Image (cartoon, rainbow, N blue to C red; front, top):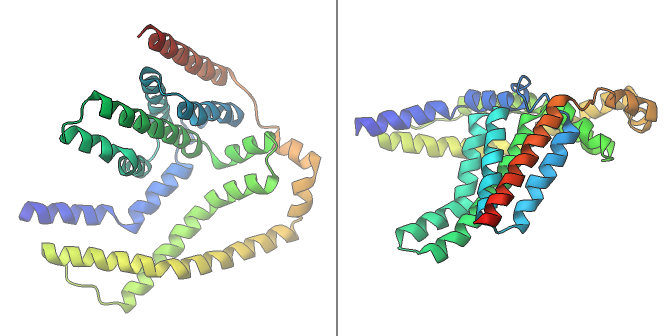
Length: 277
């Protein structure tokens, strides 16, 4: 019983707002020194289009395993935060993973397991490719890459602005939670039953905090938009010279070409192995 109580206490300590905020900020701004973050966003977007679309149209198991191994390596290279990886594992398990485990437990043969394994590999490959690109790359570089491909400037700006709003959003969320705790009366959490009640209380407080969080964030966003209007944001958004200056930092390097070549070579080997099998 003491071991269970100690474990639950450690979990509650880890699931603090400070921990979640640090994980979110680390994932958004703490990976600028990785190989993936230093690549050209245009190359990464092309790479993502392949691994985000092709696996859905292929049912060959060796090919899907090869794609999964490649995107798993790129995710490790991106040094994604542990919270994102935990959510990835939870999402894959909740969609297809539990079906695979249930099939194994109840005596399913290869004919029943193989389709579930194929579907699980598809979901996992596409998810890891998305994590590699959208979590491992700098928000500004990602926005510039989308702009270079002709996406509306408002879309690219919304992406970079959303990342910049993360610290403000987490800080506002923490302030609202603290205000609820000052006015509330949390249950005692010295024993296991009390810890469970305290966890339920925390979940209720988080749910009640969402409406004032959205309202306060909307107020701050309105202030930001008014400042941008004063500084001539609308004119700069449609000006070709401004766009040219903003995209002048994009440059395809040897590392980008090496990354594409290595990915192409790995896929070629995977296709060769799948045809031989």
